[in-house]
Length: 264
Length: 313
Image 1 (cartoon, rainbow over the protein chains, first blue to last red):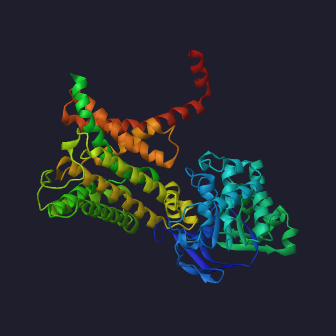
Image 2 (spheres, one colour; image 1 turned 30 degrees about the vertical axis):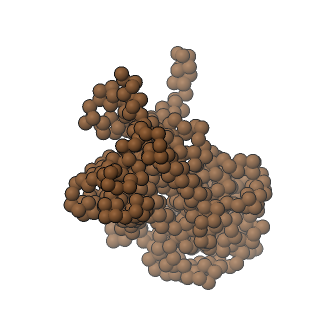
Image 3 (cartoon, helix red, strand yellow; image 1 turned 90 degrees about the vertical axis):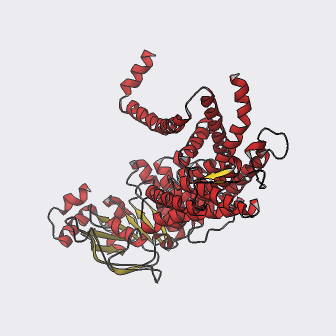
């Protein structure tokens, strides 16, 4: 479903601030894979997701989604393959537009936008049902401005928007990191539910090792711009946090690995 | 005496306000919907007037001339949009560059003269100052009302369409827009074209109303447009929630601006000080929400102040 072939990216090249964020990284996701991504700060997790979504172009290597080479496609064109939820709850929605208007915009991801009316009555009914499903009471506030919602409500809405039109690949970039623990759990539960129901191929970055172990069928760990650990299947199911820390030390050859990971 | 002369000046102030209101609606599109401060308008207003007057002087039908003004304004918006999205120049600077370039272009359109008259006796003007107090169909007010309502209706329709919604999303949050597959660069250019098209139409009508086009007629136009937008929001923001009504509020804002202007002029204000006064008023109203936010933040940070404040009160 997703193929990253030897992608590299250096920010501020040829300056004193040069930073190699992705270093010859390769990764292949199979259809239906739900992969959790962990790693310390600056390991390149978000950079990898941004490279896939086209926020910037990679220096070398290629990116294939569903067999299509998207390496040179601009961000807005890649969007037709991707559903994205960001760490910042402000980033995924248009605050001064209504809840149903936001959903209607998401429903047209990848389609050409013409002079037809922006939202139909049938759509509103459909959105109402989907919002009921979230159990956040949003179905009765469809004409409220999204700016009035809490962070958790916005993330849940963004999740719905990212999956309203089934994406080839769902990218979750620490989408619960800015929420309080209770809300984070709820949003994670909703994520699991949506991913399972729609059988979505997913990449989820998390800073919480327990979450990384508890969710998905595959786990990858990143360090210094490449993947140092890739665990799936039965091995992943049996994983514990201390296992992970030990494996990380072994893979990266760093003693202080545990501190770095736990603190980030 | 004061009231009689004010009453006599009122129809002129209202009509001028409505004409500027179309320009202010154009400013609303960039400033409020697209979240871009576009300074092209200072040039494109005069471009609209110049194109319309010169075409009519060479015998073109006034409605056709008006349409050509619309096209010329949209072209100006296109240039600013390309400067910004294709050359990476900040939006404000892009507008300033186009505005400066338009000064030369406007002079060329106007046959290298700073002023070109269009007499109401010789030409079939759509709107003219001369008939502003007459109670017949020559009065510019009814036609201006029709044009304003048509503009509001068309924009209400457009911003409700899929394309219009994507334009609103672009102004609200570019990250979200691109993640949802919206070509934000295209939309920014489109919004700038739409805005400057309206501004040029306003300029064309203004030139006819005044009976001439002047190379400097657009100087400070952006500030008048902003004043109208802000007055409309302050007075009607709480009651007018609907999009069409917020556009109407902008138009009414422009009318109120010209009525207030008339009053302070009658009270003896020196005409030369007008721009200073307008700039200060707009600065004040732009600053108010910021100050409000600062005060709220301080109160939140230090709850004791709130308590003390209540006790003192």
